[in-house]
Length: 446
View 1 (tube, rainbow, N blue to C red):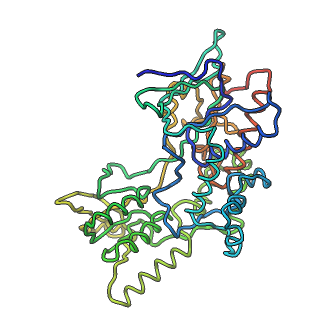
View 2 (cartoon, rainbow, N blue to C red; view 1 turned 180 degrees about the vertical axis):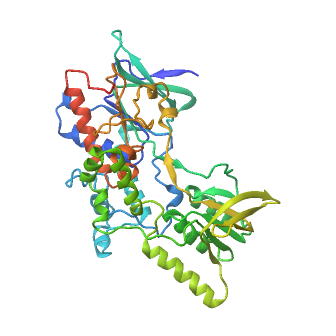
């Protein structure tokens, strides 16, 4: 494979891998810093995104779904309330600021927040290269044995069979999450993950194929939203939710519990002992994991009860249950569902099975390649990360790896959430500036 090299004398201060909300927030922080900094103090940055444009959970942009965090937890406000990149500035430019205020809500439509991300990304488009999948991150060793840079190799958008090599003092890894599926799951035209919900439903609707029964596995917000959306989209179909709980659990969004998402909570979590960290995660799982907004729970229950009164039950729950086996025969699915209290199994014929089984961090080892070998790990084989989100690396390494996400074990439950995105971008910018200003090599683990 042929490779092109960036301008020989170009060394980026930071090169971002992935361009979702996290690295977009960092790009904005750098843009605002550079606008007020002297030329020699500016940060040279470049961001690479494998998708052809910015996309954030596109498969779940249901038209009436709302955000689960306040609009004030946008890309900038908690870092810089006066920023021109705020959600309110976006609304002003779109001519909807007064209309939004009259709606009296903290939680915008998800499709509107995605529009806000696209608007912000367009304003820093000169920092981003799309359709540029990163294929390797190679350490660069100087004559004295110091690893001072990384060569980031990505596919050339103009010719995917060719690669482009860019050199950077630091990389910021923000590649998001990947769908989590039960072991042995085989995806197909009839077995999906909910991340593909909208395009799959659209294609199926346009094909005119009959749909008699749909199963949705999962007890979290995405599962409940998928159940609701499929129930509305296929008015002749039975939609059956399958989960191990007795019923959907309401999300704990009470004021005191929500303090787990505060920036200060990251400091508390980071300093805590390992057993305290685990306790905090266990105590507050109900703020984010396998929970559902109360309004949606009540709406689904009202729908199910109304159908029972009318004698036509399309919305059904297989609670305290799990799927044991899935077989595809003659264009349909045969699904074995076990009722956990008794072990009794029920065999259901279905046209579709949607896995709303969550996400997991991507394997940074596979992404970083040789550079991953420089990352130090703790007793549990988890990557060691400093408070400034910089990975602790092997002695002799001054090039930096910053993680945005995949740090729940060190920084807490907000690692992969929007709540601290703005603050984290400022912390990484401060770290980049401090490392560059330092005349001595950064202290690494070891």
